[in-house]
Structures are given as structure tokens and as C-alpha cells.
Image (cartoon, rainbow, N blue to C red; front, side):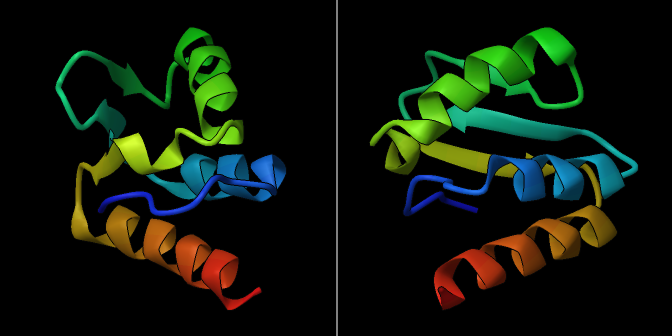
Length: 81
């Protein structure tokens, strides 16, 4: 799923990622960066990018359908505000 907006509520984002049982990958559209959001080091790098105005340069991939639904619910909440 493509990220269309910066993430303001980082804690809720990480809560959603933590609920996922499989991989959660953040991929820059041009393929230059791929971050495994289950990795603590990758999280530090990702949060810097997601808080800036660069959120629309990334796509999020989940390892299974259940995890995808968790993240879709988070983004539904985000866009409802």
C-alpha cells in the first residue's frame, strides 16, 4: 500500500506494526531503500522519514493478509482525522 500522508501518531503506527505476525517492509518508490519495520535499527531510520514530508515516497508491504488488514485499519484511522 502506498503511503499518501506523513504519519503524525508514531506510537499508534508502531502499535500496529507490533500486532503484525509476519514481515512489514517499507520500500522507497525508487527501490533505493528497503526497511524491515520489525528491526529496531530500521525503525529509527524509518521514523525520521515518515515524520517528514517524504511519506508519499514509500510503500508498505506486509507478509500476510492478516497483517495487511492491521495496517489498513491504522491508515483508515489516520485518514479519518
